[in-house]
Image 1 (cartoon, one colour):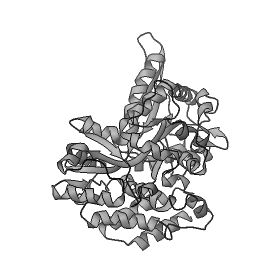
Image 2 (tube, rainbow, N blue to C red):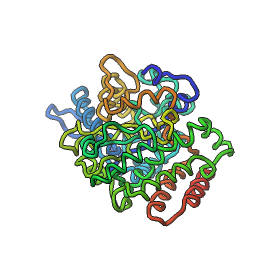
Image 3 (spheres, rainbow, N blue to C red):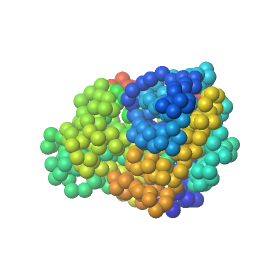
Image 4 (cartoon, one colour):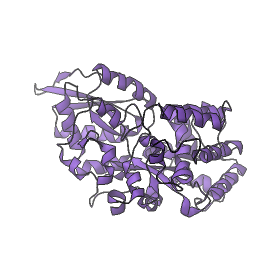
Length: 433
């Protein structure tokens, strides 16, 4: 774990530049920064801080908001949760208009409309640099948290992308252990299909889910061969079309052509994907570890579910993984309750609360002490984080245009409405904007 948090080699530096931008969806609500007060039984006023986030923040946020109410009863956190695509548009618009919530979801690094660099660069995020916890951010993580040396986002740790799988479904097909190469992975899918189990549940109707298989494969098809790919792409010396992105797209479509996905993935939601794996109707879903608790909640026994790295190469030693800082939150710089909002974030920065948040979403804690734990489901990913891991791809992209184009072209490919050439061309055009 020392290597994970404090690594200094180039490959680890790439990994720790980080990101986080993958999240799920539930309820949508409107928010306002207008401070609201209600009379308490003692006659004192209560300040309400509104927070809007995404679904994989719900469990830790609800837990820690309730704990904060006991520590500071004069402040009440009112959380609500919205789909990722709505957050990327509506909350960003609210921030620009000056009527955003006091606290809101923020994605580490760059690459989306609600990423730290994009929002802080517009002067819309409160500076958290004076808070004690920011002094312990591992050096390699700082680009995910900081812009021009100032910290603007709180995040509790890092997550990985891989295969969430149902152990009982694997046992039904006589599969004793997770695969470690691409050929083995295809063989596993064949065995599952032959016993009537959908090998991979894909909820591509939910836009952010579309990217995960690509993200899981690209570390092996691109970065294992050229760890400097991002730098070359930024310099105009590399492109999606002329790289291992093409191979990753071909592998994605191979899974579809061989009948390894559920019927009509473009008509299947994240929630349906989750249910299919949790009940054993499907054996796997390629997902971010932050949503593993959602799968466990839907299962009759949480122990039925675990994770393994998706092997994107035929040489196990050339398998790399995507890993990144989990989606976090920030304080609205222009909110009327900005100081109270920052005080809550400072509370989240206490080690016990970092531990609690990370545990709730199966993340690796940002910093650790004797009481920190790492979910057994992600233990198999830890050896890769030393020198075979890279940030989630979008966090090195120079704008917020590429990610939604990626969502769209994957849906088009799955529907047979586009070719890989056309998809990669669209992504390259968006990258150059």
